[in-house]
Length: 498
Ligand code: NAD
Image 1: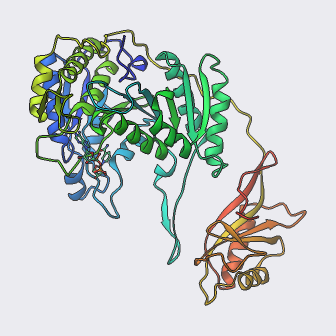
Image 2: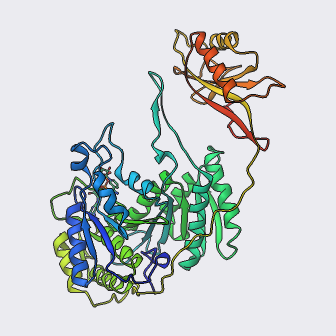
Image 3: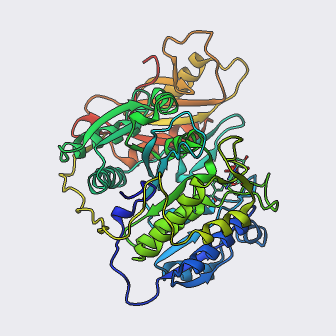
């Protein structure tokens, strides 16, 4: 049986004619300690790799590269078969973008695969039967990182989902399930609230999932789904979800399986792959030599499979599993009465190396080979919808004493072009005009919905003229959003209370 810590069934197991080119980054915090551990084990196991090291992370950020990576390192990454990356610290505060997110998106690594299984009875967990894989969309959602401060009081972050991006990750999840012998995909969204974004994700899940009658499918709202995951994780097999939700639920899953220090992560794209632990740089324990290298090591095992070194991968995985079975445990998983010896990172690494060639006796034995490349079919061909403009939302920064929505409406109506009718004003999404109530809290940020008057056919130029007319009347218009219908279906949400 193949231990279920690997997306290996998706990896290309065809050995390369040369040594695989692996770019390594030691990262920050505990990164260098756990990366050293992994590279020592790789070498002892006979993994023949062409390694190139690059610097990323805090020092690079602070040396003036706000992306956390130097331009030279990109060339190395783009020429590599895989990137093996230790966690890094993203400096707090403005100006620094997350390097992890940048690398995933720049290299098109759209699928984040996070297997989590419990190691009972060797690692304490309330969930001994847990064995699941989280497939997280890796490029879109709130991680698009498009944020703006628009008024004195209001900031926004755009949640961006694309249909091709959604189709790819949904297809990946079903292909993954099929190829790794899993029987069910459960999709987590919040489509009851975000009907257009999460709604599209769910619709795609149903549409693409229907092509896989051999795989059961189930959709759950993210909040109750996460509660159920924490309570009865054995009910889940493959979990498919959006970027932010996936980040959160995979930490929940890893923690209840025993430790965030155990879980690996693979970032897979059509032309590249990056392997890392799910945890961060753990500054609280950095430099103490106590970190668990297992998450990064298992990520490395998956990487070795990905570049065609399945036999070495299995050898390492079995030695690691045997070490866990023998009760040689780092502090995060050590438990009196269960563990035999509490060790630091270096001693754990030595113990794995000593066991190379051995197999676990109760945990599943990893095997080499059996992998086949996952090649997604092309995106579905779709007929382009007819897109028509129905109006525009103008967002206004407006802050007079009293913040009276009726007064705002009167001012806007007086300034509006005759082509538009003011339909509604909302504040933080809730309708405050017409028919607002005094209890509603109001900020200085107003969304003013203008619909095209009957019989008017508008375009972006007309919206621009409306913008100019409202601005000329003294209103601080922050931005506009076109209100489009696609084949007659509105592509915009109603106001709350509308
Ligand atoms: P964290 O995952 O670093 O640590 C959370 C907790 O888990 C800490 O108590 C830590 O000691 C423990 N822990 C984590 N890994 C462990 C291991 N291998 N062995 C034993 N214990 C372990 O999360 P955080 O503290 O929120 O983040 C720290 C930094 O890491 C931040 O700068 C964050 O931006 C960054 N981060 C990086 C990545 C990445 O590089 N992929 C991922 C997440 C967070």
